[in-house]
Each structure stands twice: as structure tokens, then as C-alpha cells.
Image (tube, rainbow, N blue to C red; front, side, top):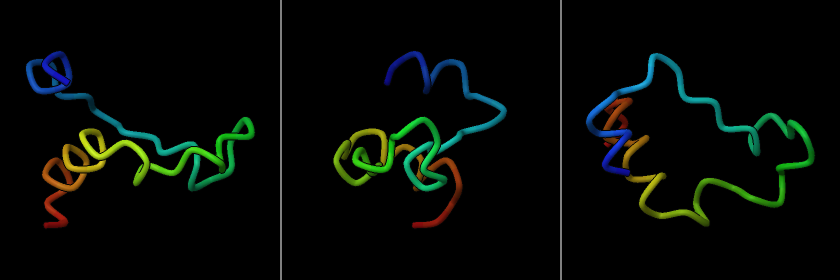
Length: 45
């Protein structure tokens, strides 16, 4: 998380949403720290 905060990525891809590489059983909501970062990063909350 510290690396993501120091070096903000140009893109964030949620592979679970697109069911990429069988990741649909790993929704972002299972990873609260990453979900919160994405929410803040995208300005959704």
C-alpha cells in the first residue's frame, strides 16, 4: 500500500470485475485496504 501511495499508478485494473484470468472469485471487496485506496484514488467516496 505504501508503494501505491508513493507511486500512484496510471491505471488500476480490477481483474475480478472483468472475470480476467479466473479472478472473479477475488472481488476487490475482499481486500479492504486496496478497495479503500481505489475508492479514494478514483474519487468515488
